[in-house]
Length: 366
Image (cartoon, rainbow, N blue to C red):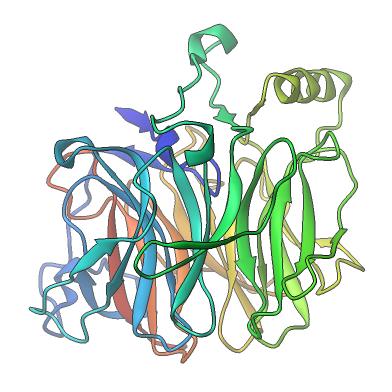
C-alpha cells in the first residue's frame, strides 16, 4: 500500500498512498472541491500537475512562478528533474511549465534567486548522465533510507537551463539549498565534515561557515523572511545502537530519516533550539511570510508512519494547529512571499494511484 519515492530523497521524502478520504461534498466556493473538511487555512484550491511525482515547489520572489522537481517515467523522466512554471491565478487556467534543469542525472531542491531570472539547485549530472542507482533496501532490513549521492553539487542556472555558476565543489554530498530573502546567503547541507551538517555561504565571496556540529542529520533549512531566524530538520541519535547505525549508514552514503525533529536558531546558527518533540518524522519546515509561524509536515499522529499532514506552530513550537487533512500525504508547504497563496504537494485527487501532485490555494490567515 505504501510506496516510498526515492526520487525525492535528498530535500525531503514522500510517502504516496492509494487511500483517499472523501472530498468536501458541498464546496462553499468554486474550486474548493479539492479541500478537505477542516482545512480552514485553504481556499480556492487548484491542482497544478496531473500524474507522476511532483514536489519541492517553491515560489519566486514576485509570487508568480514556482520551481519544482518532477519524475514521471511515462514521459521519459526517470528521476527528478527541475521545472519552472507560472502559477494560474484562477481555476480553469492551464499550468504550463518547462524543463530548466540539465535533464541529466538526478536533480533536487531548486530555489529562485530574487531577480526571478535565475535558480539554484543540486544535481548529479557531472557524475553521469544516467539516474544514479537507488539503494537496495533489503540489505538494510527494508529500512527507509536515503542515498547521499557524492556527485551532488549545487549550481546556479538561468531560466533557459544554462548553468552560469557552480556554487559547491567539495568531495561528497552538497544539496538542500535555500536562500536568504535578500539573496545574499545560501544555507545548505553537506557531509564534507564527515557528518551531515548545515553551512551558510556568502554568495558574493563564496566564503562559508559550518553552523551545526552535533552528531546526526541536519538539513532542509530555511531562512525566515525577516532574516532573523533559520529553521531545519534534524536527527539526533542517542543510544549506542542508534549512533552505531547512523555512522555505519553514513559511511555507505546513506541515512535513515525516520526520526527527525524541527529546530530553530538565529540566522547565523547561534542559539539553536529544538521546538518539536513529537516523535517519528517531523520535517519540511517553512516559515510563514510574517516570520511568526512555521508549517511542518509530520506523521506523528499515526503509529504506522502515515499519513503525513501539515501543522502550523509558533517559533516555540506551541499553539499547534493541523492545517491539512489528506489521508495519504501533504507536505512541502510554502506560502507565497506576498502572503496570499500557498503551494504544496499532496496525494489528494490522484484517482487511487500513487501520484503526488502540486496544489495551490489561497492562504487564509486565521
